[in-house]
Each structure stands twice: as structure tokens, then as C-alpha cells.
Length: 283
Image (cartoon, rainbow, N blue to C red):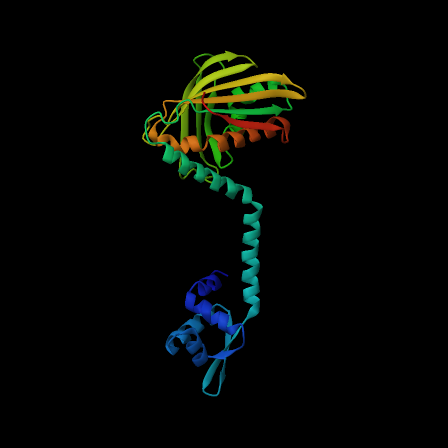
């Protein structure tokens, strides 16, 4: 299969294949119609024949080539399968495009220090689970690791210690990097400021730039409340101390937190929950 794809990957050979879809042709006619010298045409035809895409027969002083349709059908089935798989994962591709569109927009806006200061994001979920269960998923490392990262990342280190002065740490790698060859691709560090058990956690968490500097300081407030059918979870993020180089981090906030909270919803309830997300403009 690989040899067939390589054979068709050259423009002149693809032109020859298109010519042969009409009828078997001699080398001379193929060379003339494809705009090639005859030795070039012969070389290309031999490559196509080795790949099983054409067959040749000697007729008097001519060699005539005919196209084999079955290998093309096999290639078509392969490519159709790839396209169908990509279509089934269109949501991932759309998220990819949306993120990089956001990166471009935020990069244009990041023209000075503190450019994103006071930007505020708010996310709400209704979780069909008790406050105790939701609180555990906010504070226990093993449970935090199940949800506190977007879909394309895997948590490698996490802590959210529910006490004033407690550590807040989140590190992750690419989810596709199962061997860890790329190492940690992101890390954020901070401290817990306030805690009211099963009601509220306030913390500061700063993503780190590749040079070790701080991208921004994120001021987070997690609130839990009783709602009909479960627990209401609110997450509020306010940005301060934003560096010019923080554009990629800021661009990923909305997509990343929506995906993370969707994973949290699945972790505590086993299914989807109503969602109301919004970004608040600074007043």
C-alpha cells in the first residue's frame, strides 16, 4: 500500500494514471499525451507496474499499458476510512482551529505588560453529586488528576491542598505522549488563600513560561452550593500580572476550562450536565 501511495505521489505518474483510465495506451502515446520524453514515460510506467497499479503487454514493436482498477479501489477504501475517522473526530479539529484562532487574536492584543489584567472568566456547572463528592474531586490528588486538564493533556502532578497557605500545583504533558518523550509541557504553581470546607476555595495559580517566568497570576474562586438534583459549582478566574508572552495561555482558558469541567461532570456523575458559560467583561 505504501509503495502504491508513493507511486501516485509524483505528478507525472498521476497524469499517466489518469490517461490510462480511458483505455490501454502505448508508451509512445502516453509520453505524447503526458508531455514527457519517451524514456521518462517508460521509467514512470515501470514504477507504476512495480507498484501493481498497471500491467503491460508486448504488441509487435510496441509496449501497451493498462490500468489495474482493484489496487485503486483498495487505496480509495484506505483514504475513505481515514477521512471517515477524521470526520468522526471533527470536534477535536474544530477545537484545534478555535484555539489557534484565539491565540492569533490574543497575540495581537498582547502588546504591553499587564495587557490582560482584570480579564475575568466565569464557568458554572450543575453536578448530580453531593457536595462531599464534588469537594473530594477538588481536593484529592488522584481525583483531581482525572479532570483538571483539557482533553489533549494528561496530568503528571497535581495538588490543591484545602487549607490557607496550602500548595496549588498543576503539571501536565501531551496526552498522546504516552512514553513521556516530550516531558512536561506545562506547569502552574500557586497557593491557597481561603477555605470553607465543602463551600469555597480561593487560590492563586500562575502558569509558568518556558523560561521559568510567570505568564500571569490567576485568582481563582471555587464555590459549591446546593441545587435541585445536586451541587452547583462555580469557577471564577480573574487575571493579573499578565506578561506579553502569556497570549497562548490566555487563549486556552475558555476552551481548557470548559473541557476540564466537562470531564469533572463525567467523573462525578457519569454523564453530561447542564452548562452555562460566560466571559465577563471588566467593569
